[in-house]
Length: 155
Image 1 (cartoon, rainbow, N blue to C red):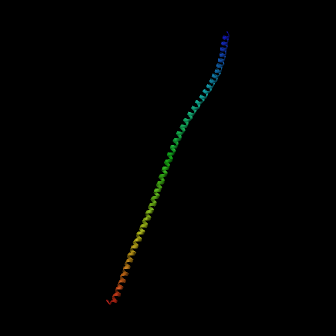
Image 2: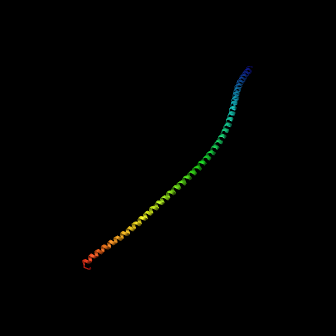
Image 3: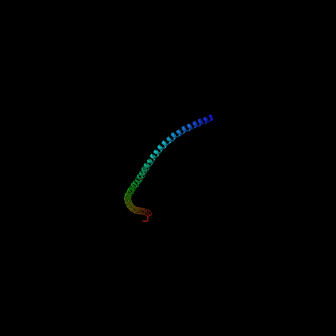
């Protein structure tokens, strides 16, 4: 009997320990269920936040696409404006250079004509001086020959 009592006592202590373990597990399970409920709520909030972010990202994509189109259109307009301005400047420079080119050609033609006239006048002067030098030489030579001829009594 004592062994039985002791066995009942051991079994009773086991049962009470088991009951205390079960009640501890029940409190742990209740706490886990509460934590799971909180996690579900947080996950639900996260899902809502993700949906909102997706909507925001979609709106941002649309805004970026719109901005890209605006920039493309704006840059195309700037490009065309720059091309037009460069064409105008190119035309203006071409006209200015052609005017300068014509002015330089006219100046060169005037200088060429002036040099031609100067060379012609110089050539005429040289020919005239050459003739006067020849006449003077012939006169000098004739005078010398006359003096020699009288000295030798040839005349």
